Image (cartoon, rainbow, N blue to C red):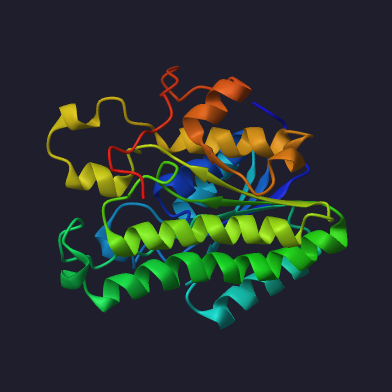
Length: 278
């Protein structure tokens, strides 16, 4: 595991799922990790397991330093307060921002693949406000601090496979926008020491997925959240990561490039969506 003992990271949406996996992998590398999300012991979103406090404690137990911050990333004042806290506690040094927060499935009461004219406006709003907009908000606050310190990496978690249709219009457009956001940020950062890129996990055994899937056979070939976490660690430790700025990388491809495995020693292949190219 790469040593990141001098790295201060912020992982948004890390109460559970991929965000938690990323935070834990950074803990394995010895990083200081600000863990954000809305879920705390007495108030967990969608009644799913996982809280920011549990994740932060686990980061510390694995050799890093976990710092839990309850934060609603759709609340601009709360996000500003989060960065004010980082300024106070870490002198504004945040070398790694992982944009992972995602509220697009919260309160979801319609079929994912229902035609777009039967999807609610609320679904669209959640996928953009608690996804694309939240990533932009955190990035616009983190990047000036990275520029001041002379280094930085922004990793944004997306989903999909190339130009393959992702199965739902709101979901497809929000994830495409996430990746376009990454490319556009990288373009404006091209002459700086700050790198922006996106990663695409495969089918991941998050708490939400495990809660929804009844057939264990349906989980064959899936990834643990730590698989994406190890991808982020490999990127953060890569002295040539700037060459990847503006790119979108599948976790399975990164595993083969950097030589890491999932927790069971396997190396799940890059995720291929079955949908048609658009």
